[in-house]
Image (cartoon, chains in turn red, yellow, purple, green):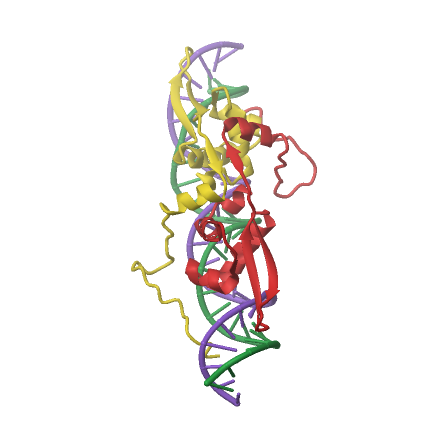
Length: 109
Length: 109
DNA sequence: TTCACCTGTAATATATTTATTACAGGTGAA
DNA sequence: TTCACCTGTAATAAATATATTACAGGTGAA
């Protein structure tokens, strides 16, 4: 969730979406970014559960994909973070086994 | 600030630092990451104002760099984000001028 | 048929972040 | 002097994130 919020475009998208539904193309114009780029950002936001989308057929038959924000609330401070870390898994680059050998004991320069 | 919090190692570092001061080497051992990597993460946290450091001389003359968390508090929800966006600047890749020409008007396939 | 909208995605280039390796230098104690 | 700690950083590799370009296909109206 924090990773999803760690980008100015995505923050702006949430701000634009606040309180209203907008379809992708319109959102791209308002955010002043290209649709492909917007899709990428929306995907990240949607994966984090911060926005939802619904494809609808307008009366004239045109397909419109409407997005809206999820009413989330997150309080961040050292305490809440310490709590959250208990549920945190940090992936390792490479090895699958929880190997603790971190190269300690002596400099051996 | 959100960018600084958008990484599991840095989140963990804040958790480890909560309520106590620890010097770099000790922190590296507890977080189970290398010192060079830790320095990088600490730098990002410090730049965001989430932690502070103080280099001290222990009684035995050894230099120790102690870190501690800043007592921050951030409330995130669609409303607060919409507020924050008013103060947000999105950098452009390339061009310096605020150019709005986003290639609109007609498909011209 | 062409225009002006709408929906999407694959491939690619670029930029940034994350992580490692190899250094350089300090102290006190055995 | 060597060991076991401490401080840091530069250069590089590897992994991700960000952004662009080029597609492909749909609708209704002129």
